[in-house]
Image (cartoon, rainbow, N blue to C red):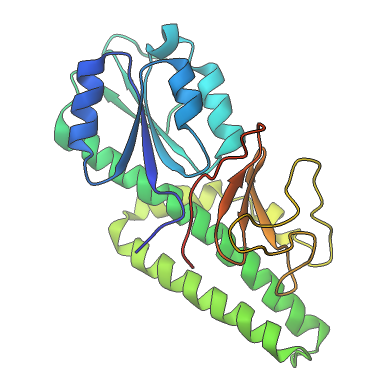
Length: 254
């Protein structure tokens, strides 16, 4: 099953440890960052998990966590710290103390990887069902545009299949955490008629050519994932427009 967030970034200044973590996480796409500059280059909306040594970049992890929150709010952070370096309240989704063992690292990354993707898929599922409900309400239970209505129902079923495939890989606690983090007020406020014009957002999908100024299936044709990052609802292509490079980020096969 191909998931919307597919990669892991390891922020570790010690090259030997970074190599070891990458080897242990060999089943995933791993990007290493030994410096802050490399982190900026490696991190994008396709990242599911950030493995962050709390001494990375001189111990000033605040800007890194802010970048995660703005560019990829679904991304989960695994903090790695010294046993003596404790804080009243952790800024990470999970923590490991050094020395780090292979089983602890792989288990933690897998759990957070599934959390991140479950969050993305659940958000899209609720947004789709909101649109379905809007069609049914406006048509008093019998939508006039049956083709669009059926396409929305098909999309909801596909998303449900993805969620059902992920659920057995997750603990009840992980599912509960994702549900609590979801912003249902934002989902419920989706307006099928609203404009999605943005100063920095491209006018069309770079892969399929879908016009992002026109709605699709009664809803937005481009879903905003973070600052300057959008996913095409038609083909799943993710586009980052934070700088003139306009580079492709990742894809999600629907």
